Image (tube, one colour):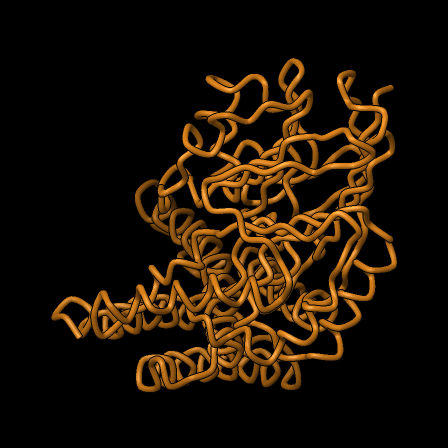
Length: 403
């Protein structure tokens, strides 16, 4: 482990310790005035989440790659939930300290803490705890079908009403409930798709993460086939390998998994979907994304593709704005994933919001620029935080029509 990585656990622990101490002295004097039962409850919750956070960090850094991905996700969740609550509460403590400083400068009188601000801070800090825990219990496998119709005037008559089912971002290394995953695959099959697209991130890091789930996902079949691409996580960029050869072997093994599932993996190439002597083009590129792995070669994949309608599978939605809509206006629909919708947010009718908007302008659902469309799937699995809240795992059903 490199020198910087060795001190990383101590830096994180130090940061959490500072936030914990600031929070403790922020509420200590205030909660002492509460009824005994409530005081004990506040202290109990505080020390419980502090212990969970610290123990989780120690286990994560001590266990390293020996820990299963799903177990590590739960440990990270313990740290994340506690840290998020601390930040919220410490913000109110900071506001109170600013208020007290103002008194000290201008009045030099009452420097006691505001019980109102601290109490509000405690309530606000408790909200993410409740919500994130709720998302872990109800969200990871709460699969939902999202139906969309796209009108393409040049669509050949044989493909009128073509039903495409798209799934994305399986992240099999995060799963811990095979029965629930199997129900998600049942939902895919229930849609009776003509063709299925998988738009990348089959695993978190390692090809072996798919071993327990090959039998489940190999059930996905469709009359016109199942087609897939790679996502940024599939290249193994986020773990340390013994050497470059081991990393390359893992990628080769992952590519072979697609074949074992019965999926046609597209690697910067195109082919045609054919029906009743008519055809549409299907282009698939490796990952290409702003700030991520860029090995996708759209010029190579697109070259020679002759069809009245062209569909593109590209994992990262930033590819659409950066290259597809600028240089390849003949690509009618792009299918992407990658964002997961941050696995949290809300969707009410046409209105939706997620913290992922801070990173991606386009992050879920259908987008249009002139005659070109992009559909972003919210993800079938989950990564990091082992839950979802408001942005549920998605099975997309996209129907093509000539109008």
